[in-house]
Length: 196
Ligand SMILES: Nc1nc2c(c(=O)[nH]1)N[C@H]1C(S)=C(S)[C@@H](COP(=O)(O)O)O[C@H]1N2
Ligand SMILES: [Mo]
Image (cartoon, rainbow, N blue to C red; front, side):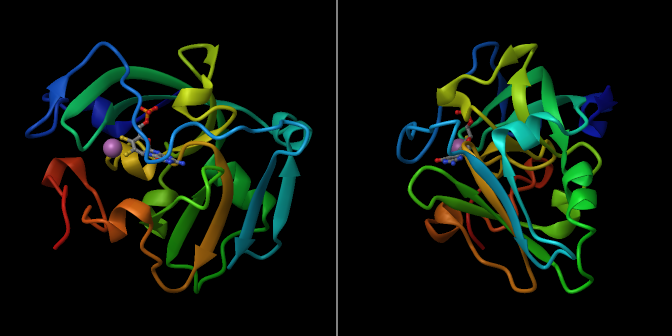
């Protein structure tokens, strides 16, 4: 089990947040229909070898578990989540590694072209993964099932639900919320909530 470093802070609730035991559902457009027989995860752009995984391909990859907290910019924090899935590092190895020019990532959702952007350093953090279960239960569709990105150290809007693509980029490409007033980076410990 990978322990997300933020869970070892003495004060685990970032400034301006309060703890919730429930798990609210938040997204821009609602849950899209996803047919698992047609599901793909495409890893493309500035990787050594682009890959396109079917659901069967994805399930055959080595799994990991990550224990992490989850902070939503709307001021709730859900502590003690155990995410199961495939580490971003495993996926990048599969793609032969990230090219040196890759500085940003755009994560694409199956919800009608929704994207979010993040710096490569956050994306490559040891506790980032593509999760398919939460606390031992398959991710519910409303929480991003079958598979979602989880980047524990950033606000939850960077953790793209219904993940379908990861594009490695040289230039930043602001996503849906980032173009609509949210901060480009989104570090909860610095309260990077809204745009510059
Ligand atoms: N594809 C996609 N992912 C998304 C969103 C979205 O609209 N589409 N919303 C984000 C927001 S704003 C938050 S706070 C979290 C919420 O995740 P949850 O609904 O599982 O709590 O998902 C993020 N991931
Ligand atoms: Mo959010």
